[in-house]
Amino acid sequence: MKQLEEKILADGRVLSEAVLKVDSFLNHQIDPALMQAIGEEFASRFKAAGVTKILTIESSGIAPAVMTGLLLGVPVVFARKRKSLTLTDGLYSAPVHSFTKNETNDISVSRDFLGKDDVVMIIDDFLANGQAALGLLDIVEQAGAACAGIGIVIEKGFQPGGKLLRDKGIRVETLANIKWMEPGHVEFYGEVPN
Amino acid sequence: MKQLEEKILADGRVLSEAVLKVDSFLNHQIDPALMQAIGEEFASRFKAAGVTKILTIESSGIAPAVMTGLLLGVPVVFARKRKSLTLTDGLYSAPVHSFTKNETNDISVSRDFLGKDDVVMIIDDFLANGQAALGLLDIVEQAGAACAGIGIVIEKGFQPGGKLLRDKGIRVETLANIKWMEPGHVEFYGEVPN
Image (cartoon, rainbow over all chains, first blue to last red):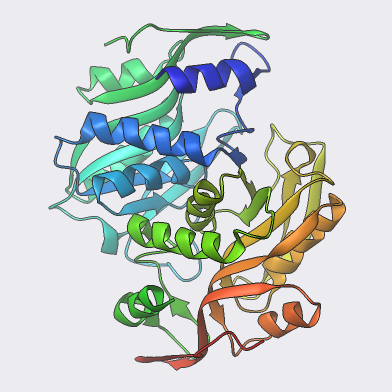
């Protein structure tokens, strides 16, 4: 997605060969018009997939997921990263390890909002090692729902998550797939490397 | 806002005289079309206020804030509830006590995204005791920015937060203001009780 790649080149900051900071438009400050464009792109790619629900994870997945949900006409559910006091039982949950933070948290989704008749599109802001996506897939499986595929805003194509998911036969649609990067430079794949 | 009040009556669940669960359309599952309508209402009320930035707090404030930001044509910044490893310095921060969870967390916003020239609209999902709103106002003050007012999706008008903020002279716009509630019943104020 050209608009997103240009935004990453203009406003992203590569802190190391593994860390891309996009907190000026995605992870902390959010550019709503860009989120709308991202939603249009995801909705266009998944419009024939029979999606009944979008599943994402708090917090940075919410904005692109809600814009996509608006255009596909389906609800969005965001997985929580820890259990809240008003949601103690009736949960699907899965462990997710964060290599960035070097910690494992449970993510959880209420059983009220995901069931066996759902066709779920998963959306997340980043795909690197694939741990969050695997946790969300685990929850979709626990619900007995079908997974229509995964929409990723930015994939670090040089990390193993994308291959791991695609090797499982899961449809992964990435809007900006980074081939490699270093401070001052980002290079994208021309296409998703399926 | 009639559409929101009807949604609360239809799908909200009053667990006690203080706890309203709206996780089927706002706090866990999100209704994107309702979020768009909420964004339209907030944007309409604040369109003449010269807003340059919307400030909210993760996670449930993000969806209504992004829809409002899209319509006002301004960026959204969400305060984080704990410091992340890639955002360790250059922060505004403030303590926020949650009576629901009986704990105090710091919320923080990068200094990169809020400054003295900003006119900030604060958006949050709930207003009860006003602690989150006071924390966000503290951050706006630390930035030397102006506050155009606060947009609240659901106010528990029987709790002290709304009066506390309005007594400070802050403009508070509430879309659904609950006069009282008990399991099976919710009654709204006809208008915002200024």
